Length: 565
Image 1 (cartoon, rainbow, N blue to C red):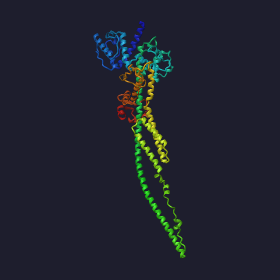
Image 2: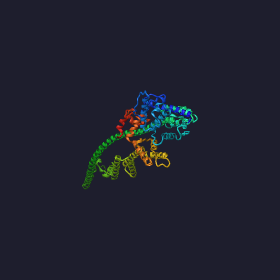
Image 3: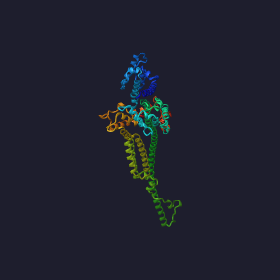
């Protein structure tokens, strides 16, 4: 590198790193620096910077006047940095106090790469550069004319910056397809403006620092691109949290509606049961009365037969005596003549048939009723059993098959059978929907295996811990570094162990503690604005109704009311 080139990269790095430092200081409420080589010399701003980066206190003298006081401040800062396991090569307190440009830039780069980017990228044994580069390649894969192979010339035409934004927020770069690699200044200007205005990514670079140099400074571009990484990783985490919250809110909304429906139907059933009890009593009363009437009818019939027989006998006697004594033949008055006294013989079966009373005592109908009652009892037992979703699907399917096999002849039994079939069908559909929503594990494992094979190096027996973190992040999962397993004796994580981790983490998607983290990520002071989920109120009408149509949801109350501890 020529002396002129060294001056150029120093100039660009100084400008980029100064903006980066000021962005961090502003976040902590501290004043900005103007000249990095002068304003960091007393250690005060360095201490402020570390407290923002690490959220930890650093002891320092806020008003160092003498060189010794400045040296002490810087020594404390450097000791703090070393405690964070950041290697500082050939950087001493005197180098900073004396304003050594090269070493001050080296110190700031160490802070950027080891405390800022490293924390963000979860990089393990892979270098920060490779980790960040891999992410850039991954998110721009498939974008025409974008080929990221480094943090220098690959970014000169500005397409890479626009592609990353477009990948996550296509609405911010609607003209991406019309961008030309020859229009560097336009492309870079657009990306930088959009990133700063809409994504709050501080503009650390100037267009000329990239477009008008032969080889753009790698560290400066890495520093700026790390802001994209952080922003869109946060975007992905928020999207994952939003999707998780949407899922549970939609389920709770369904649950509220289903519970309300249950209570309405249950009260209707209580009314039906009461009516049925009254109707049974009434029918029994009618049947008892009918029995009495039937007995009375039989008795009356017997009397009528007896009287008719006597009348025929008496009339026969009258006619015989009249004939014997030559008395005029007796003809009964018209209204009591024999033809008026005729009546059909009583047939009880015909009477029963005429009022369809036989259906109360038909053995075949009773048999079908018994079969329906057995199905009903099985239904109740199955619906209340503490089986998991998969077992309930199997039980309901078996019941449906049984119903298909049974044949009924009585109209009422046929109607009841169709009712059971409808209930079983609806239950099966609901169970399968629930199962589909909660058992995406197979697809997740397929994607996980594909990612594993993608990062698995030739002749390796497993992946590294950083590869694991990257794969999990692509699946919308995250893991604390302290939870990463050591792997096999070679320090690699096998596919089998990796899939076990994925399965375990996927199962926590429904864990209350993980759900609470998602709510905390999107809520402010314990209140979640339902409008931020981009779900229409009509699709969460029951949840909205709980709040009196207020879109502000109290997270703690929601968990107390609906989520198991």
